[in-house]
Length: 282
Image 1 (cartoon, rainbow, N blue to C red):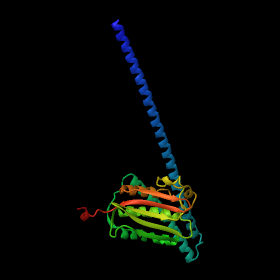
Image 2: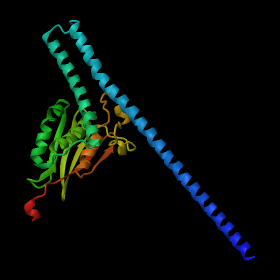
Image 3: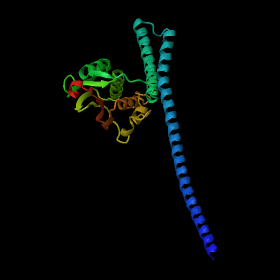
Image 4: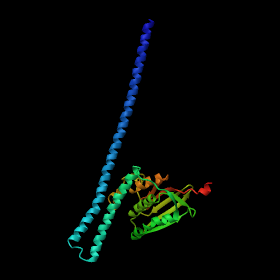
């Protein structure tokens, strides 16, 4: 009798183990299926992004190439018969070639930054001096587009940033360049405001452009993302500018975000580290 009870107990325990294993197997199988689904979705999303990227790049390379071929053919056909017309044709060809070079450079920089193949050479630089140097290269573009530039620095005079000057200059170029492309008013305005934030400073760049839809605002720093309006406008672009800016800022220990109201303009804010004053530190 005791043996029978023992055997029954063993059978019951065995069944319990089998049931337990079956339940765990089902749970594990469900987790594997969910993981596979997530991987498939990520793969599909990645492929979609890649297709869109290739489409954008093809468009943005084809547009200046078409213009270059057209103006070059005009020169060969003798259409540019006067010195003034010849200068205009050659200047246009050069400008379009510069557009292509800028696109290739941006793609190269994007790849280097995201693959961590780029070295940051950080050092101290006084804020006003640095902003002046950055804006000197943009002033002609802003003047040509009839955009007023306003600057205000509320940080203590002589305060220095601790940054890679060339990389942060790229951030300024990308953010301000993105701003003036979408200013659709007769008199544009870009306001650059520097605010103190302890060990960091906040840089706020505000424009009076067309603004961004609320549902698109969280996406503008994504790689290859372009707003619907820019897809159908002459501004073009691969959607890399703000993604590059975000990565550079984050690599400096800062943050970046955007605020916008459709039809009124956009403000992009990012933080940068100050250079530590060793005397004050002691």
